[in-house]
Length: 233
Image 1: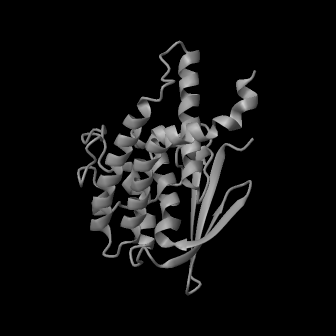
Image 2: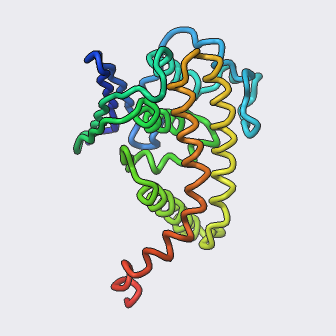
């Protein structure tokens, strides 16, 4: 039985140059295994534009784990603008997805995987979405995955005799904290490169984090008819 999961993002540019970024995850807990070697860049220091919601202890953690793992990606895209075109292929063991997109759009999903699987206490709350990663997802698809993730977590809590948040009150807290991480990381990335591909990919993620919680009510109302068979049980 495989003990790892792998998602590879491949970027082919207009000059036919290609860059591959494999992310290898431990299947048991979805932690990133292929961490980069070498000294992290200056902007990976934990205290450099540290997130307001960071709970890591500077006495024991010198570098931000997300920044350490994002460094190779940031370096690869530091000389690109966000509006430039790229052909992206996302490959898992089961299938491949492809799309011609702006670098901003094509890079956002990869940043999201690395941010969630690097060991950040805030971002790891979104780990289940990485297990069922859907490249180039529409807003409704992302909202459905997020809602499913949260409700399954509440089922686990309920089975353990703990309070279960069936009214979804905790979603806003999660995404507020995720938004705080995104804002701080945009500051890190502005210091890391002169061009805007990395920064705007992060801004794209932040926009998603802000919109998804507001989509929940609308999506629940829209989908109720889909569940008629289940509701009749």
